[in-house]
Length: 599
Image (cartoon, rainbow, N blue to C red; front, side):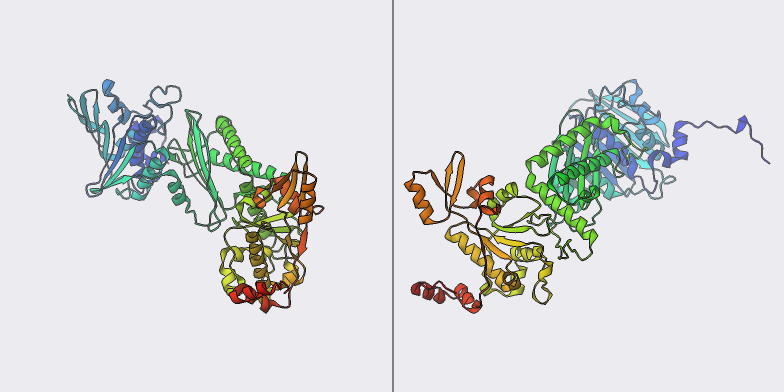
């Protein structure tokens, strides 16, 4: 049995402690990328204060020498400061109670350069400051040589940290270049304030320049089918935040969040990401209840992609690797309140987009309830992720096929989201007479419309799967509008004629003229009604299209069953004649010359 006494107690010097347990100070020791990042953090902190125009990272994998250079204020030379910050733990100008030189910083622990020195075979600080040039050379953590000279002329840089990592410490002394480049790309994208970032690897110089939106898309691998990006920001200096998020339909349904705190990527997430998710869930939950959507709070996280940047005076990280923010919620009150306000204001001003997302969440919930995407009435439920369809919640609702975004926006304002689904057409519908069914279904507008109905087509058609009680075509009351209406009817007649035969297809007769006085809005559908109104000196307004009606007026002429005029489309047994009418010019001229409008 071995003895144990006070003689067995050993007190290590800081540098020896770091070398003995490097993982405790810098995380994994597979390669020395963290040492480069420690040096880079100091340069970025100078940049955040507006003191830097150039930051360069120099990588020499042949000689295993790496350096970080900046043109900031320069490390102070007096009082042996370069030696202190390289050998004495917890030395620095960034501690919480003495931040005289830095308001916002990522290097907070006073450990970084000491760890770089301790874990390197050679380490050098070179400084140009106040007309002096100083050089400090270390070997295996110990100062070997230093000199300070007077200097005149233009300085090449302010601070340079150069080191050669120890082969005894690291499995490989070649750093993870992908990670280093990502750090520079993140800094370049997020700062966007004139700082030039340079990466030089074995003589190959690359200027890193990236805008934030492109960086977000690359980082999150956003597909072309993803919806638009939402931008939220608060610039309550010195603390501030900037957030972007979008919903992606192609990748994993699990949410993905990428964030940085004081320009430091925080891959492990933490308090700020959790609070972002919580605020988003609460907002969508409240909106869904108000608008009558089927919704579970977690649904709003499906396909969510988030990029969140924070600047905090007192960030708290989980360990020296700083891969997770561990601030208590109470210390992030300003961020939380400002994010809630920005998110609420955005969706109050973008109601249509809000309903697009609520429809997405609702469809996702229904898809979980039925693998076959069946609605409550047994009909097939098409996934409407990011489509132009604004769906309704009732199994016996009405879908309005409207012309363009202008009228579509009016419908969204005045509709009852329980009863009225809106499908805006963007672009001209093809003439069904000249297209095969397969070609029609490949057309974006037509294909999405047919899928939205849920019935299928051809041999797979099932009227019982129709999601809506009525399909209503709306168009302007002029000849162009009527032509679009006819083209839409022809699509139904060719692709899903059973819908017409079942009496489910309608068009709404919209007026050209209305009495529009202070408290009176009266649609006029016939020439006689217009003439009578003129004879009675009523104030008339001519509406060129549905987009000119305000939401209340649009409701009267299209949505209100008590005031609108619906016309049910009857299936014709003369489809060959109708096809010829739409496709053969001679047939059109013949019909007009004979004044025979009967089909």
